[in-house]
Length: 108
Image (cartoon, rainbow, N blue to C red; front, side, top):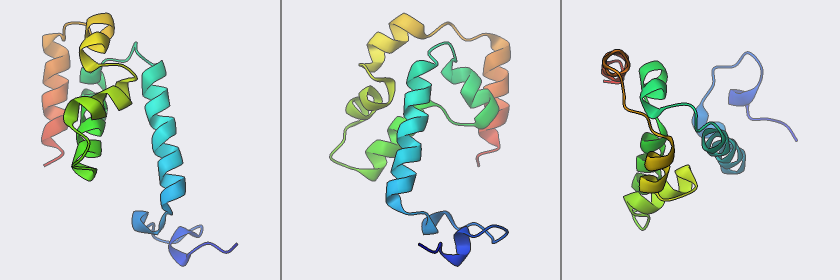
């Protein structure tokens, strides 16, 4: 199987050239990793990458209007969001909030 020119080494990458099966597998692995790493707070992911588990959930529900926000969150968290939050989410510090705000501003 030959790869499209946009996926060959050294070529400019076009994410749309990536087949959906590969993209879906990578997405599922990312979600699995985030489910495993309950020690990593959303505010810290936001402060570094400008997105978090909730963002992934929102993107899922935007991609499929039949998927409501809470159902999308349950898919990403592996349980109802309220349960995950009660079990794993710590209170954010002012420093974490500040880093998150700086990072999120870069998304615009």
